[in-house]
Amino acid sequence: MKTSPQKGFTLIETLVAISVLLTALAGPMTIAARGIFAAGIARDQITAYFLAQEAMEYVRAVRDGNGLASLNTDPQNPPWLTGLTSNPNCEAAHCTVDAKQGTITVCGAGHDTCPFLKLDTTAPANPFYVHGGSYPDSPFKRSFRLERIAADEEKVTVTVSWATGGISKTITLVDELANWQTF
Image (cartoon, rainbow, N blue to C red):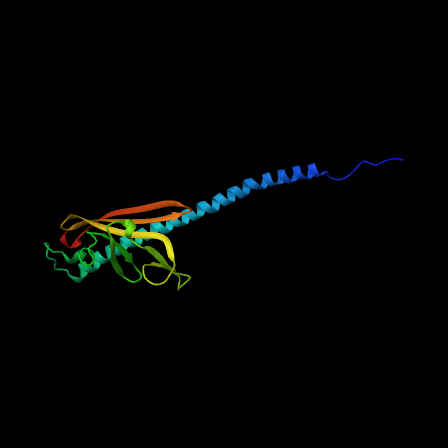
């Protein structure tokens, strides 16, 4: 009698084929996972930059509003910083900005003492970062500090910090504001 050769795969051939297939899939999966992580970091960096810019613009708006409200300024006591250097005094401590509510609040001697921003998603198409309400905490902390340079000039430093994937990051914006009424 003739015996025909065995057809099909042996167990060892099957295991080798599976390991080659898994190795071929591991590279693209790793690249995809790292890409998703990098996209999350980029999203948070962009959000932090815009949060810092929003705080800077709010401080400018307070300066401009005060200047327009009182065009005859006493140079020794300029009202251009009312609400920023008195009640609350953002030269003596770090302050937070809630642009949606239009409030400035002293949060403490350092940026770390400031509370996390909360994400107000009551309008899902247009969420806001706020400080009040029972909304969930976001990963972002934002504060600003004023430093008097001259009677008609202030340095504004806005700091936003957050953590993504266990990596802590900070963005700092610095600008100098002048009392445009004195020029």
